[in-house]
Image (cartoon, rainbow, N blue to C red; front, side):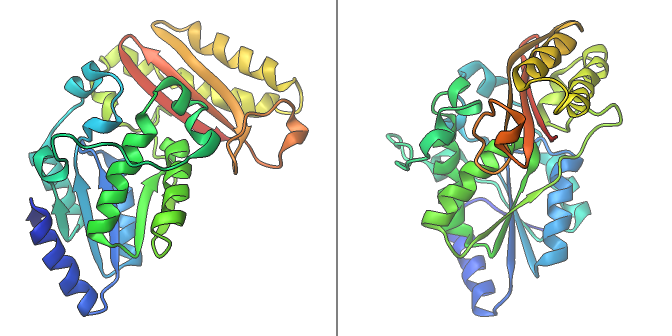
Length: 280
């Protein structure tokens, strides 16, 4: 696997592959890799001739400086995982390579996607996400880019940006991988102690319970029951629970508003913020 640290070297490799008509698959990450990330790499390897991963902890998408500071970083073990999976190249730039000192976020109208759920509770987060993804798409020029459905709203945001600014790139969502107890795989899980990590199974159990209650109780009541179920287990505190249309992500008032309902949750385990979602 080739390690690339600067944009110039990346551009040379990309140009060479494009000249040879080689399909490029791309998996952007913030590192601290787990099997969920590796599943995206494997999907790309299946569908493309050459797979590039990136690792960059993007400061623009952290609205909480403490969260940025504590975000896990493990480049050496990440590289070993990528190499074992068969990834062809890794782009791992320094912040100074990506952003100039006075960088402004990309100006792009995300509509209501910027004001609900993650957009509401993490102001500026999605502006930071599309800024870095737009840059990476411009440099890597992939045929297909892969993202996990755990960040389902992020996937919708990136698709909207890509449709407008990178119409030739296919943005593919891949299923969430889960730990044996149902907890969605996340780089932040390493910050949970053993007991909390075990008890975090309640998040997935509560979402499964919502599936059983669909069309039995009103939407607002299902949200209330899911909240109670999660918060009965220490130390979990719900930030939001939303049941929304899976296509446009607009919150539902009643079940008949959509053919494809999806539940979205954000939960604090002490100071670690966990998000998850599931089709209902």
